Length: 167
Length: 102
Image 1: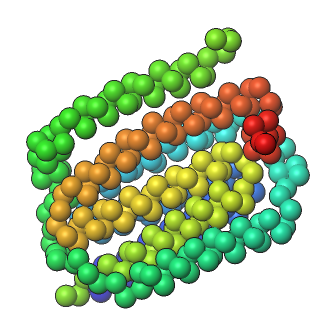
Image 2: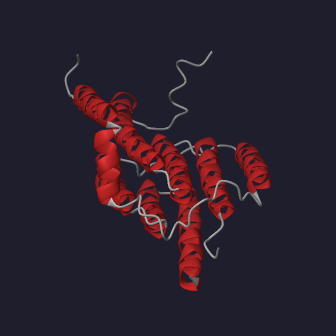
C-alpha cells in the first residue's frame, strides 16, 4: 500500500510538472510533447484507481488520436515565427494571479474533504471491461448510439472545414 | 482504511484545472489554448473517475467515456478551424482575430 502511495505522488508530480511545462515552453511542438507526457501520467492515475478500461481508452484516444492530430497541425502550419509580439508582462502577471486565486480557493474548499468514500478504490471491480461493458450496453445504450452520430457529424464538419476550395 | 484520501485527488485535479485556466489566459497561440482546454477536460475526467471508484458507482466512469468522445470530436473540429484560420490570415495568433471585437 505504501508503494501505491509513492506511485501516486510520483504520477502527480509528473503530471503537474509536465502540465506546467506545456505552458512554459515557447515552441508549440514542445508543448505537444509535454502534453503527451501529462496524458500518460493521467493514464497511470486511472490504473491506480483500478479503472483499466478508462486507462486503455485514454491512451488510445488522447495519446493515439488527439496527439497525432495536434502534431500534424503543428507540422502543417509554419509556426517558426511565433510570439512575434508577446503579451505584455502585466497581462501575464494578472492572469497568473487570477488563476492562482482560483487555485487557492479550490484547495481551501476541498482540503480535508472525506465524505462519500464508501469503497476502497484498490478493491473495486467496476473499472474492469466486463462490468463497464455490461453497464454501457445495458443502461447507456442510447447515448452510446447517439455518440456515433456525433462522431459522424464531427467528421463531416472537419472534412468540410478542411477542404481547399471555397464553399 | 489505508487508501489514498479522496481530497488528494480533489486538490491535484484543482491544480491541474487551474493550470489549464492560466494557459488559456496567458497564451496567444490558438493551438496552445486548445491544449490548455484539453488539460482542463482531463482534470475533470480524472476527478469523475476517482469519485466513481471511491463510491463504487460505474455511472461515473461511463460519463468519463462519453466526455472523451465529445473531447475527441471537439479537437477534430477545433483543429480544422485553426487550419482554416491559418489559411486565411497566415497566423494563429488570437490577436489577429479581433474582427468580432466590439
